[in-house]
Length: 218
Length: 97
Image (cartoon, each protein chain N blue to C red):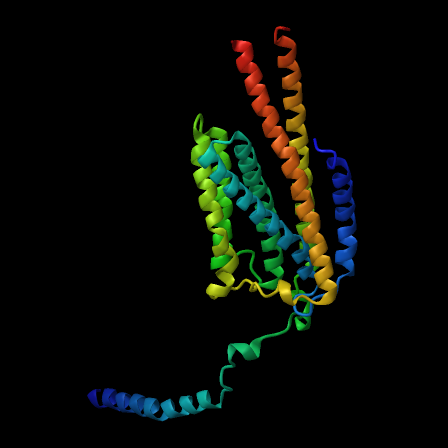
């Protein structure tokens, strides 16, 4: 593990411990009131989801072009991040919507596309788990197409009429909300860096185990 | 008998002709239906029985996020532990050179 891993872990733990205090102290939004505070974990979880998806796609391109095993380790890590943090977003969103919109779910463009992208990365993981030999290349294609949908998810609120707030929400946040929001985003992104480091190490170790078993058989 | 039936029919037509405008005038006295926007009630002005408490939803959302992150970190730690044990096991079985 890199030497920075332990201090970074402590920093992320401290940030996640302090985040609820900042969120509690942030101003209450004037139309949705208390439930709007879900925003401070909901949006950063999508930041990590999108980052994981782009990491998966970038590493998949490299894997397909160069055949790099290391790139494949990053691709599977990115896909797993997309699944886990996408799930957080897909659960916290309906909890917020129930109060703000009166419904748990609405089949509008933003929500439906987000679900489709998440399902694409679930498909990636299933392919990796049960696809057998050669599934890495198929999965790489799935990962690239999954990430290609992300701009549509993000800009869908501007292109089509949807119930979901537009992309202008974050740039127009009030001062008390802005600091808390970006603090939470930073905490989530640093957590992502930690997870990538740990998860890539896991993939390297697995590759080493396979190599050792092959040597043992020879 | 026949004259009686005709009389009833005339009476019925008269009632319909006279009653129609009367019913229409009753309808006209009703207040016009409100536009949907006029029926909007701000969240804080809803009666208590119609308000959905925000705190349980907020707590549920944060609990889900924390549990998912903690569970995922735990799963990575367990998988790393298992693979390290596998490496040690294979290392023991490999002939020393």
